[in-house]
Image (cartoon, rainbow, N blue to C red; front, top):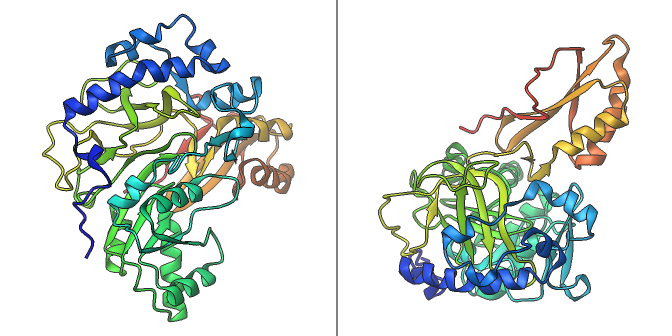
Length: 421
């Protein structure tokens, strides 16, 4: 049985004072390096890097928002001038919907994914089935980097081909699944339908979607008792992750050792009071792609006055993902941006106003574009609109035509009404 209180290295068990001191000592060098990139030179113009040695000083710097990346990158392709390592010296360049381009450098475990994997029980000599996509986006390669650091073997399964996923599990007997919650549920259901034995999979590390407690309980009842969630993104890599205490209510997620995390009032950049819900802003100590006060658009809160984590890790814990601070949202592991909704409406002049409604329960998302039109009796090119949704978002969506003036005047372009219970 894997010792779930073991840690990847001694950084994870530092005292609060030691960790804070080392993070603050590293800030001036990080900011000075960032200022060598043209994008950061503009954003941090006039900033004396040597003077940024405290959280208070950091909080006076401007916030750069994830939602601004597309515009920044269009102005200075491909990375908005935020990269300190040239494009041709990188290991990979990823393309996320938008499109937004994300770099990967050549360092070992560049995305810092070994920590969440190790906390989930992945060990040297183990075998994991990697069911994140290998196509354009970096999640699968985050897992590959973490696996190489730990020394475990990977089945590069990717997504789709559910029967083949089941067969691989039945034949090769991996101990770990890594991927989205919804896809593991599909695999388990398909295995039951096929009469296949996939009981070797006892632990799972999940990301890219929310993991409601009801689904966590379903996995436990269906043969996967150890389920852990990671919080990561294509531009940042690992931000925080669940540990051996993660299955307990309000145990939270441990912040990554190379991330300096702030919780701020959405839209302002001003830190909230300890324990208050706000937007996650991170400063990432990455030599190739430094991020300074990068606002994720996600809501969370720091756990205050919480007992020490039984896993032994001492870093700050947050409550995990609690929704979006902006209207960009994630549907079936893909980000959908308001700009994409605007572009769909622009392509179809019959649409007077559009609102994308995301509904259903987590792991069973439904996406419907509500379109105000002048006349409801001629179909208004619904099939063409559906094709544009698929082309621009890479996701399936339905269209609902509504009368002029039917949609609320509340400024919402994307309305997330999913059931998160």
